[in-house]
Length: 364
Image 1 (tube, rainbow, N blue to C red):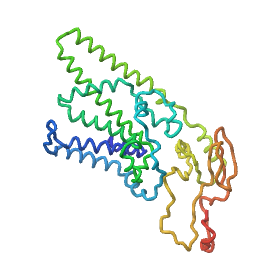
Image 2 (image 1 turned 180 degrees about the vertical axis):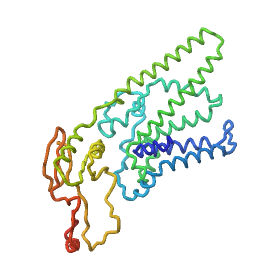
Image 3 (image 1 turned 135 degrees about the vertical axis):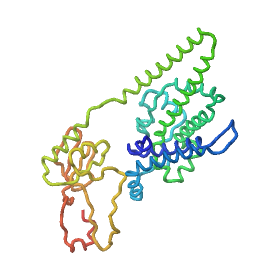
Image 4 (image 1 turned 90 degrees about the vertical axis):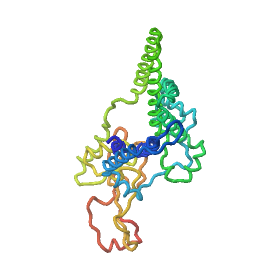
């Protein structure tokens, strides 16, 4: 269920990166090791993991199958130059700097894709996991360390030998924000920290000096409480309730009151506009940039193609409409509403003679 929910929550970045991480953990779990000697495959684990994968696939198939069908019609600008890769120093700041006001955030990468503050204490606790290597945690520790190294290499791919592979495989360059895999690096560090603290507490328990044992437990408890409080205080600035997007509601309520017939609307800069458009019963044209127009049947070159266009567009005040037939119909606090006077109505009729005029261009 958790795997399906990650996919169904939207944004394929995290589902794709999760698949990479799960592939590695499945490999680590499916192999039996004694020390560094290979002992065979853990078939019981493999069967369990296979069942989990099939169930997750079944739960998300309602969206996964249509997405797979639409793939030939989805276009997206990639990043073949790997401009969003980061240096090791910048990656360290992602985890250790409680700020998004950094030059790289203003130049190439959205600020929210850089911020992953967890503080220094989880890394300190993770160092104690090295002591657990000889205490039955070897495979888990090595798998988590390898995961963190992979995350760092993925985010800094431009500066690694993997850059040649990424630039040659167009699919890989579609993921323009490699820093989003940082969340799985965070999981690796925190889990290593938990293993490290478990080992440390076991060592403290073995101590016969009551005073030293008590002092050590107090220090560990203070460190844990401080780390939790630090992360909460630093991160709650960005994870908080905000006012709903009032302007979108005002715009589309006005449009419904002043336009009686059905129509299409478009918001070229549509991030954050889906809720007010859909909640107000509008018909969204170009709801997301990835989907290209494709006809249901192979077009006949001798017949004029009918192409839908929006009847109204909403754009910010600092932008200008690209359509020559755009006429300003209303202005709000941050945005303007334009009518595209030459767009086809929601329902229309056209003669066979007009359709036969293929040289006249698209009918839209």
